[in-house]
Image 1 (cartoon, helix red, strand yellow):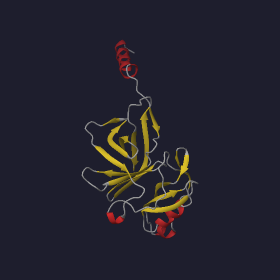
Image 2 (image 1 turned 45 degrees about the vertical axis):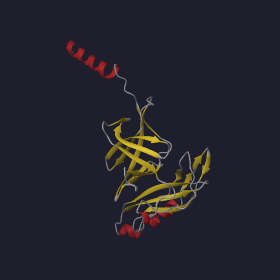
Image 3 (image 1 turned 45 degrees about the horizontal axis):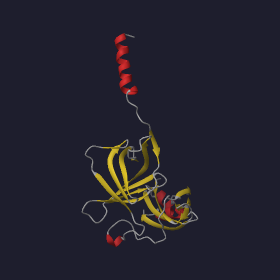
Image 4 (image 1 turned 30 degrees about the horizontal axis):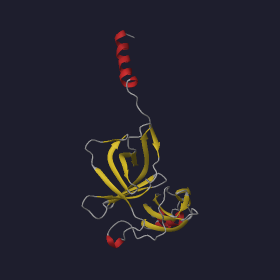
Length: 239
């Protein structure tokens, strides 16, 4: 090995490794992030879309009539508490990274970015937490009116046992596919008290509802005590 080559190699190692410490990236969780978030646009009174982040790591993104679904992960740079965490949405082999910031518990700002850094000159999307008593179909907004019973919580409910829906034979023979989105009212005992359909699919909705009714949860917690709360889940049906 020539002396010149050794000098160049040493210089590169110093510039890339010794002089700069690259912090580690770790997957993390953020309390209060799972739930339904409504995408609000300046000057509009109705949401343009909604983002459902499940406690099981699944998400549903609705933009008017376009629905996408996939997995999400939350990351932060270890040892760098001043940086914002970021959200990675994974869908059909692609991914989108958004740096996020809470304003209180019910307002979420999403900005294009990665590794805790915002992309220069990126816009800011404002999301607000969807109310439990949601807007009605007649109002032209998202979802249906839901019964009361849900309480504020510090820790979201977590599914312990999640029965998979039985694919109806008639739907399988007809090669019917689709996604059913449900909201389950989880009691203090972790059992499902009620199920509401957010998005149905012909021939598939009943099977999804029957499955979710059998789910068992670790209930939501408020000040360390179990409380009743809503849990949203999306189920895909494919042959």
